[in-house]
Image: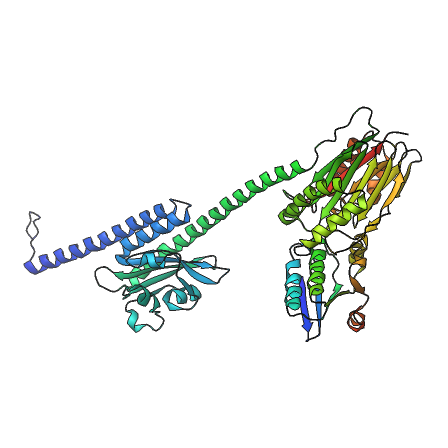
Length: 449
Length: 112
């Protein structure tokens, strides 16, 4: 080295320096590729909530970065306990998609899913875990595999596989490290997409239930057309525990001067009970007009319900006819909670305990015994479903008949007032507790002498 | 809810413990339908460890009664606690089911 600062190198050392620089450039390029891939990966993993789009992008990325011929994502079905091929790219892909399934522990993918460990298989012919069935079925020749599980918080969602490098080389441990890192991110994205799918599905179900709820409420009379000179007044309410329910009430004019009134509670809850109720109310309206008295109507309804009985479903129901000229009440109670009769003139409360038989839809050939009475001026009948008595407060205490009786004894002017007061009392009692069962209340007041 | 089934060729006892409602009754239903498929002549459901039963649970028992009735089998209920008895009595289901105080009586009495 001279004083001027010039650098003198031998040919060998120059070559060595060039070699080192080339290596450094290579490492730098490798690192640049790696970070570039990481950026691409994060873009892919946050790009969509659509599971199919996500999986397609994951596979395309995997094939590009791993330089592979084929790839697949298998998702674990918890019900069937099988891995199901959701998407496969490569020559045999179409033959496997949405049709190929694999048991846990079988083949490389099955082993990875079961052990929740990633694996690189440089040469499948030397690995006993390899399952050759797919190659035989598709004609594809598997040589080398990279496979990683999709695991989030110890929950296995599936596996991702890439197969055969395009350059004929074998997959390496270094490939596996990058692939594993990528698959950890894929797992979170797959879980998010699956949750999103479930959310959308639930939203659809909820929308359908809202429609069903509106349709079901349309079956029930919203108001009872009454004239000024009517000798009676009726009010009712139905509050299903979920969107739809199995309680019902109805009021039909059988002929001038004769009303038919009913309240019922179908066993169970939700959609099955709602469908049962919908058919029952239509049968009731038809049969009430055909039969001569409540006992006969109930007998025919029972016959129909028993004949088409499903899963033991039944209905408790009260049916009564009211002679609107004279106040004669004829009724049958098929296993329903007896209504409360309030005599305003004497301030007395009695349980209307007559005409009791078994619920409808259980046994063939049942006779229904009728009971009757004449209403006096101011008499009020309160019909209700057991949902009102199932309403619990935070301490687990139920609303009671005695509490209902206090309200009936209290100050109210019309059946509508009484219904409102009863609902308010139950709501106050339950507080923040959710409604457990459908609640239906129907009140009839006789105003004539 | 827990369901324990003990049976031989002619009799079966299904012992239930816990609340029987919309969500738990399918398990009881599974036991009842399996036994009725085998046409076991006498099925007794022991409810001594059941404090609460809703109408879904009762419907499952009604189904048991209907299924066994198809092959002229006997379906009985034993050991109702007062809270469950109240449900049966209110709906007049005591007129529908053969109800016994003890499992032994339910197994001993000859079919009606």
